[in-house]
Length: 262
Image (tube, rainbow, N blue to C red):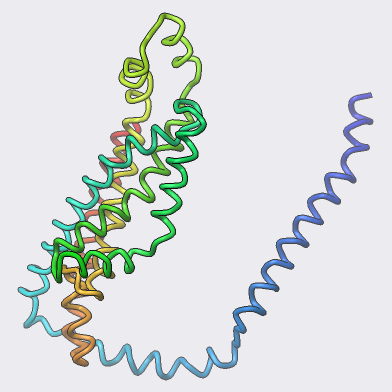
């Protein structure tokens, strides 16, 4: 009987799957029409892309010292911005989690997360540049707020994936909210929190480079200056140094995240 009922449901499942696929295709067609993508135009643009790429080489290593100094500033901005953002994200994540916080607090904390994430990093850079002036301070503050928008959400999901039985057992023995947080929540989510924070640190190095476009310090500021001055070969040196450091940090943090997960 069970086999017959499963066979009866099979056509309906197939129909449902087909409808979902058709809906997905329709959405992509709609998006393509709205973007007005033209493959012929893209094909004709390759000579200009190649011409620009040729101007980038060979790299001008006479500015290597400037690149290293600017990159160190970028790493410092990312380190402080990520750390401050992670610290601010923890209470927001706790307030957002449905298995820990009351509903009104969840709404307020989730609204705050969404509001922060809706502001592009470059706009944050403009805001803090106008407030504190050009330089690394504006970049650090921008990265701090930008980090909160993402890490708070990641931390929230980590908290919501907790084993409910462990929390229930603490409630049963009369543990207070702070004790539940200390002994039930943090030990379970700490490896995930550290892993997400390391990933955000990597990402913020790239984001800090973009913030340099609006004068928020770091290697991005030098990169934009060279491009604006048509000194493309010097800009290439900046990008190569950035690539080398991002690759090393990625390898290091990947190894560290593996240790945290084991």
